[in-house]
Length: 265
Ligand code: NI
Figure (cartoon, rainbow, N blue to C red):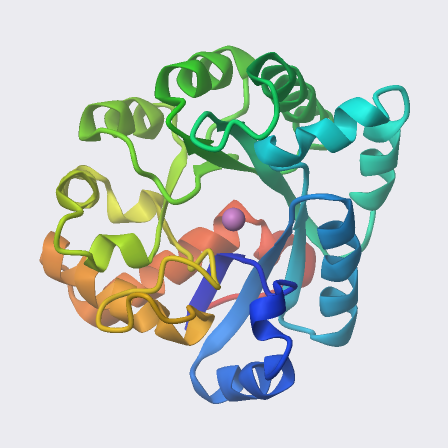
């Protein structure tokens, strides 16, 4: 069984065939999907997806690029987000972090709201999904000081060094692995997957982006996660079926679906 721990099915790339795609997932063994609502409109859209599909759960927060939305309503936005996070199918807070690649929002504003949302996650005891791009050290420093308990944080689409991965793993956090691991030039990520305990890896798509080989460049979807699992099993020399089962159990544990929804492998 497969858990897509990070997807964007509210993206317009799925407008033409979203329902057909969801119908195909039942036979493909896709048991659960965490849809990431990453700004106000995406949060609203994620509610609709989760209301309509029993296997879609909600992870909500403001992506670093979108923290200007928080700044524009700085006196009320945390209270608003707090309210959204009370919905029944909310299983995590994210994706939050820092993005110095796009620099769509001023860095100081990104940091301020990253830290504020980490505090909110702690208060609500929700697992956190981190987005970090070209901001390795600042992200690390903020997370190290945030006091998020072990097992309660995932570095989504991990793209930094194997050395830094060791530090996150030591803190008991998870690494999210998606299509990039199948790319020939993804040397650092393959090294990271080799050194990480299988029990600390989560499978994800970040769809519609980051499609695994041999579909690279086309639209991604949860049905392509088996290609990611093939590569993780190859790199680690683990049994393919066991790799799938362990990654699925990791996701259930991370998002606490057993506890809250009675799901098991
Ligand atoms: Ni994402």
